[in-house]
Length: 434
Image (cartoon, rainbow, N blue to C red; front, side):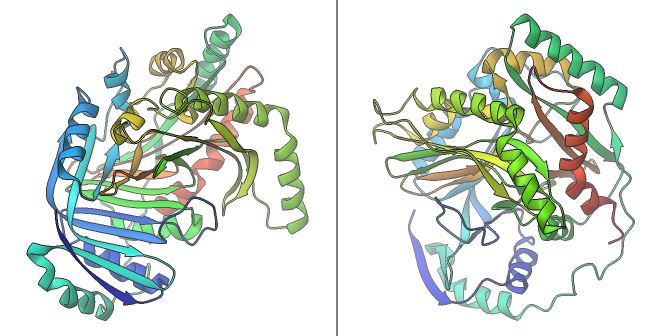
């Protein structure tokens, strides 16, 4: 599909970001991907905005990856969208029977008519030729938008409820520990849902506040009609750039301190914590195994192991695994063979997913899935949907989930404290007086 490209010189400050997002939400489909200028290797753009679908794919999990493969290979254009965790049922003999308050489609991608690619000092606007005469008009409208300051429109805070009580959480973690003791699994990611029903929120304002207090490298705002994802994810799932594929699993968390000395001490504690390192190393091994299913022989390597990365709310241990792939392998096949990501499942992966389904109280849906894009040449980049608020405006249902890795060394009380730490930013974004 041919596009017309026009480049403008511009810096991407917070004011322009707000204008872009508020302008884009007039359309039914929106994908906004923002790195927040987080300095890291393996990045392509400062930010991307895609909006206004020309074509789209929306389906349940059955044959989901095959449908996506057909769509992506036939369109050969930019595609933006998501994979829910429940696509696990397409790649393994699994099911999802837990409560689903959100009702998101299992898979959604769209081909945008309007695309904005931001680098440090420029934006390249690529519109489908059928609307290329609207580029200049749209850009002038975006730049000239006058917006109220953030939080200028008051609304009632959202009252958050927990689907799993504290006592039940401890019971379920102890049941998971029993599975580990029996040797059924070595590690599993156990999650719980926070939610509210019968509420109306402003998705753009909520995302702006969540992003402002988190500043993650894989922030995403996604809209598909009534379905909204507001993600402050720090984690990359999978990226393909030419023959190179990388994955960057996160496992290992420590809280931030305002005191610089205490914060530095916490980094050293996290870096050397045997439990946190073992969590990360087990999942790194799982990712290495996943990549070896399609990698060129001898090309899988760990570029970085248990490196500490610092974010606004927490410190995290992140490993980077890379490999080379043949250009004969379809891009969607790389996703199929690694999905769901090991950091959100456990090891062994299939056994962990079965136990997760048995013990958790809510269907994960888009949480633990991935949001991202395909480029026309088949390159792609996807985040892991964590630290994210999900909202169905038709059902007036808002939800966020948090979890952590359970290993033989896990203490239920400490795991619960870690969940509350991870939930802090989402809860603040929803419960505040806006």
